[in-house]
Length: 352
Ligand code: SAH
Ligand code: SF4
Image 1 (tube, rainbow, N blue to C red):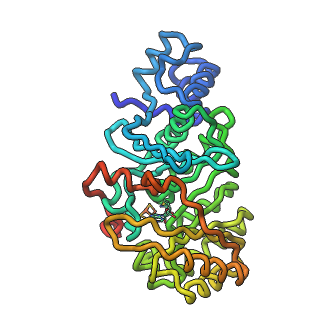
Image 2: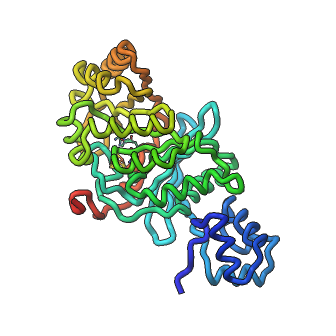
Image 3: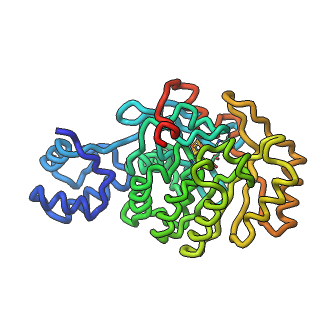
């Protein structure tokens, strides 16, 4: 019999399972607390009888992440993990320390099928979606391995969260549950390359999470060249979806913009960006592009980035240049896994 992933179950689902198994509701609640707070093995559940623990381990398993590689930045306290999943697949997570606490950047898929030209995560395509439990396990492991409480989560690691919508939705419910890690929605950011139907679906949930859009270019021709997703849903459709999300949730939207020399860092780009973001309550994050060896993109000069930011701020668009953390440890997601894996997965074009 195939074992069931216990960590992907909500408390209500576990209670229903237990009642069906002839067990008491309060036992399910006890087990849920263990699983939701980072317990990795049934044998650790000290207030549960040995008999029940054995019964449970014949039905369920607790997915965990095993540390394969851990890199600690000498520049700041950023820690990057390469984890192995139960089936041998590998993913990345990053733990970052900010003044307000610890943030974990988690992966939502093994690889990614969106194939953005500047990103290491998409180069090999998509291998599989992560389960809610595997997203939770990344947060738990970062906490236990460093003896800290994680206060914020960003879904900005490998993978496109809105291409794994149902599992991400379940993860958001589980991670914010006060009986579990209790990380509130306001402390969670979800980043998308612009899967427009997913943005509408997320808006319908009306959760106070921060939506982050990887925009990277204000003209369709440049953006379509960098991001295949733009060939499916263009900038105007994307901005309309953002406006809808904002209308429902009232949340400010973040726009990510990786500055690439001679590609998207011109004065005309800044001007156009301000025009398309007019009327959206937003914040723009400029990030010098992180060069990956599979493309020849070069970071914009400091001066060009500063001028771009000044122009946007002058046009009324709140803009900051993002501080890069862990610059010495390949902290940009997808880069570490690439060093250890080299194979081919599913691609976006294959699914059109
Ligand atoms: N798939 C989602 C979330 C994961 S990518 C998305 O694309 O938004 C996380 C962020 O890293 C995105 O903003 C992405 O555009 C950015 N990114 C990827 N590769 C990069 C690189 N080489 N340099 C700078 N930013 C990069
Ligand atoms: Fe996927 Fe995001 Fe990378 Fe694009 S930037 S390939 S959507 S992980």
